[in-house]
Length: 94
Image 1 (cartoon, helix red, strand yellow):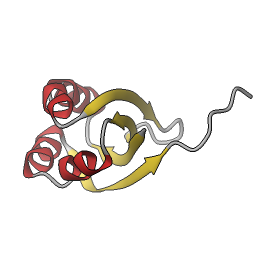
Image 2 (cartoon, rainbow, N blue to C red):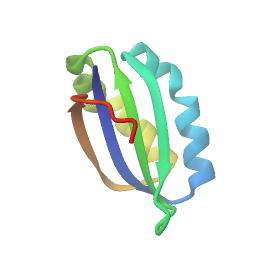
Image 3 (tube, rainbow, N blue to C red):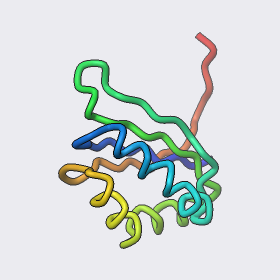
């Protein structure tokens, strides 16, 4: 299953989180199967998003969309995000 890992800096986390939650339908219709949010312990305005996708091609299309850029700007994302497209290779329990 493909994953997308995104790291970006936000101006105001609560504002960003509301916008992220409000954009959930767009992610789902783009093929996202949900995921997990993380914040840096040292820099809480650095946000990491790990999302599962049903198809790598659809994930890349979504990541390049004008709708996503507009949503990130409105949410207060600062600068250009780091985006990584990943494939799961193993699971560990330890």
